[in-house]
Image (cartoon, rainbow, N blue to C red):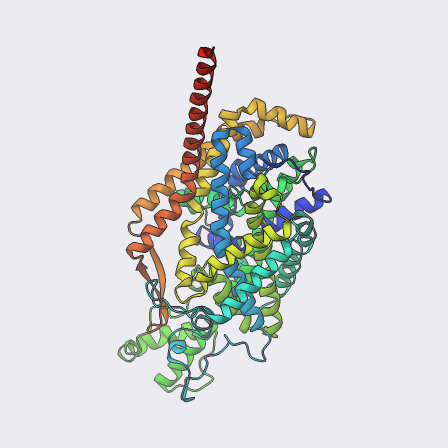
Length: 599
């Protein structure tokens, strides 16, 4: 390992902001609200906060302590603990590499939407005309304008992963721009990153606050907020609720990627990381709840608009079908008229083919969406119905962009820091080495801008990190607790902080956290096996909707490669070190025997 003087953060605040910028990402905006919606609204906060205390904060603390103590990236830090564990750091680098390959495509989509927001009419607000200019494009009519803009205009998506084509030039340019900005953010290593995080960590909160004020004043927003904070306590008896709470805490804090170890390695030796671990963990969880209030106010607005549109359509249908006067039915008495007409003219009413409850606000609110569907379709749908939609669109996609870029700083640092610890790379300038890493990721990532790129994006997102991260962090906590030893770890912490960790930390590291991780690990394996052939959502342009398809054989093989490649780094590196030691041992024995028999 290189022994050159290691740069440091200018002050502890830079380190905290870097951790916040990295940990607070897109998952807080598009994953946590979805889980709240799926698992009982406010009731989900109970298992979420319990898992934060039992799993999130202790493991966050552990990674910061290792990075600060060793002053090395993930590979060097774990090799210092034991040469056999170098593969653990290598697994983290591999996982971060997979994340870097596809994560910036989300930023490219944000750029695409941001650039299209500066138009008098938002392009996803209405369907474009067909080639003959006689009416809307059929695919758009079958779907919605927001779905059409995302799947056709933004992605240029194919009908399956097996169909491919050329690069989407607009997306490729936005992707290139994303990597250029990422490079500029990390060009001088921690010195440039430390300046950037002041903006990337704080501006999203400003936008969220503005959106909160706007959101709660929208028509029907209160319906969404009430829905969020109305707990469905029966969900607490559902094991999946607890598993999803634990998983969300785990991934939201960015554990296992090596980014936290890398960030902490630039700290002063006596920096108070214990306090920082608690602060950053609670800021991250608080942001998830804050973002959910904003999201559910938007949900409430969108659901209310859809509900009232449904009522208006039903009102017009009844007026025309039964030749009633215009002012006889209004939005408030639609359901009364439905009952009255159904009992008075049952046969004629049945011919209308209306469901028992044609319009249901709760059903609208129950429609759960996550990921890109929430960020780029549901939000776009709500934005187009707001006054001054261009302003809200620019603010929203600027926020998404900064959340994504903030996380990219951590992702790239998790690759660069451990590699630069090696002598072979330590003599290369920061500008050149960081540029080569970004260029490598850029060239491989261009595949995500092809027509089938979104399906490969989904594959990487679903299988590139989940399994490997659970494995990495499980090995980390077992290593620290039972191989390196908690008592030895305590002394290291005392050396840095001036006091030993209290009983809470030791109980979490030694028992509770490993048990939770083992349970999650087993659940993931069982769930994967029981799930059968892996599937993905393919866009059917003839129906104007997504449909479930099975991955082809090559896709399943690639999933297996993603699952195994980073995990295999741990045993293969340990085997390599063992064989190397045996070879060196036998070589030294031969030398001794030769020197013994020499005259």
